[in-house]
Image (cartoon, rainbow, N blue to C red; front, side, top):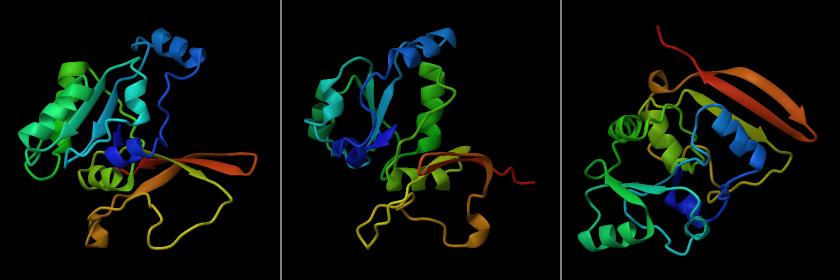
Length: 183
């Protein structure tokens, strides 16, 4: 799952992946290729994005009721399925419940962006966080962050994680955090 701007930037893994991953998916009882979800509350999705040039698995768009009928028809023309969840913002709890009931999905990888990540954090739907730390520093007001949406107004509402694993490969550090269960 990725936000529309992330898909537009083509910064997500769009291809079907190496054959060894497809074999592993089949061995574990999964479909040969993963389903792909694009999230856009406004319905603004670049129909020329790279993801639409590779039709090896279904593409599903989650959007909201604020999207006009003409924009819905445009989305239906480029995606395999378009689902509306929520009035102004996507109701991710309902969307993921539908995804589990209709598609049997039990785990979902979200590749961002920051607004999508923030919405999932605020909905309490993130159980695991995978971060890659690279020795490249950039910043500024326009630099993307891991969570760019509304955020939490108080510290007692934040999502707490703890390190589950950490490994270094070359100059990069790969960290997996697991959500801390509240008591």
